[in-house]
Length: 174
Image: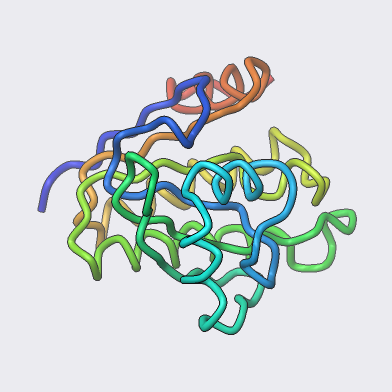
């Protein structure tokens, strides 16, 4: 089993040439704002058509489609939790998003995947807490079951990228 390489970059996830990009999707999987809308626009109308028969997605779960007009071959759609103050199981649901995405990537024998900052936009999850869950979950999964060789945390903001860079370097997040 290969050693999982983790990285962070400040970029537009729709421009990455990886096996799969992860979409922080709405439960309907039919597009929305933020990264979800950006991915749907960049992938083209066939992405929405591919999502329609999937019947939506539960919070903490994930489903996969082709990438269509993206450089990425696949889009793994996951629905993160809405922040409710941290006492409603949000951390477990967020961790489940990362595990389910990596499991689907393993099922498809993918070697690289890029994650956005799941649930930190309109869903209100605090950026540092979300990054801590993301990094810990991916490291844990990568140490046991993962065939994926490279995971990138793709941050739309410089501030989010700084949080991930510190966590990946083994320092506490700011």
